[in-house]
Length: 132
Image (cartoon, rainbow, N blue to C red; front, side, top):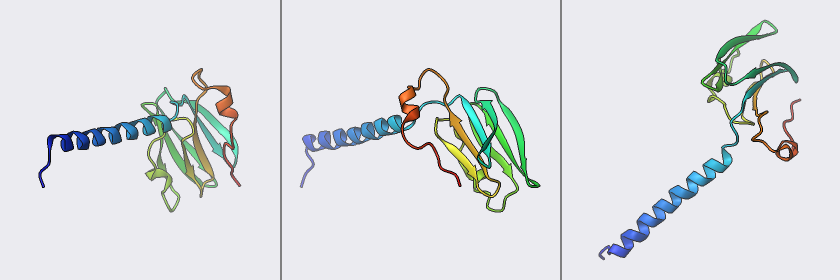
């Protein structure tokens, strides 16, 4: 069976369509760029930092620590002395709603957007987070 010119056009068209759909889905799910990093410990906000200012700081809790870095408008956990180290292996966060959590130290980092891009209705929809 020979592949005809029309078959190649259909195959290339389907491949391009699948890439287009993938791009559209990723773009729609990516969220808004956040401009504020909120740091909570034990359910209480301990710091709010702008994402556009590079900084590094240490959060201590019960004799343990986490080092948080904001660089190039992305936040990540650089160091922690917890046993599992899951928080230090998470990808940097920069979009609204993304978070990094260190369960042993009860630390929660979340990116928020306080700019004009976000509609108030979107902010009020649904449950934000539940921590016990």
